[in-house]
Length: 171
Image 1 (tube, helix red, strand yellow):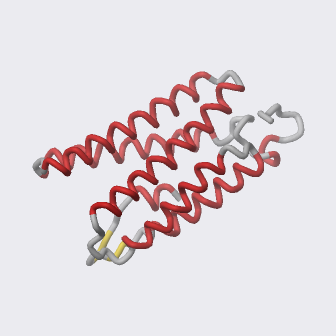
Image 2 (cartoon, rainbow, N blue to C red; image 1 turned 90 degrees about the vertical axis):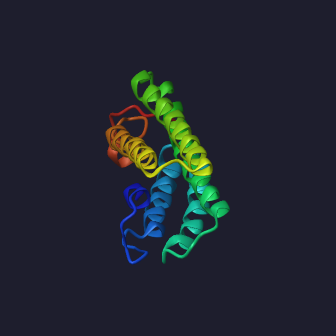
C-alpha cells in the first residue's frame, strides 16, 4: 500500500498509482495489526484514514491548496511515525534493539526530510536542490517499506497464524 502512496506516476495530471487504494491497503493492514498484534497500531490507522480521505483531493491532479498539501504531508509523516513507534515498542519489549533503532532513526529522518522539503518550498530553492530533496525523501520512504518487510515475520509483530503455536510473541 505504501508504494502506491509514496510513488507518484502521472499522465496528463491523472495519478496512475491511485493513492486512495494505497491508503486503503495500509488501513486494512493496520487494522489487522491492531487486532492480532497490539491495539497501539490503531493510532496509526486513524492517521492513515485521515490521510486516505485527503488523498482523494489529489487523484485528478487539480491544483490543491498548499495548506491541504501540508496537512496531507503531516498525516503521512504522522502515520509513519506512529507505525514506527508501535514497532519500536514491540521490538524493545522483545529485546530486538536493532529493529527498534532502525525505526527510531527512520521516523526522525522522515521528519527532518519533510521539514527541509517544506522549508525549501517556502524559500523557493532551485529545481536541482528540489530534485535532490525528493530523491532523499523517497529513499527514506523506501527504507521504511523495506524495514516493514524485514520486520514482518518477527514473532513480536507477526499475527497469530504467522507466529505458529511454538512462537513467543508480545502480548
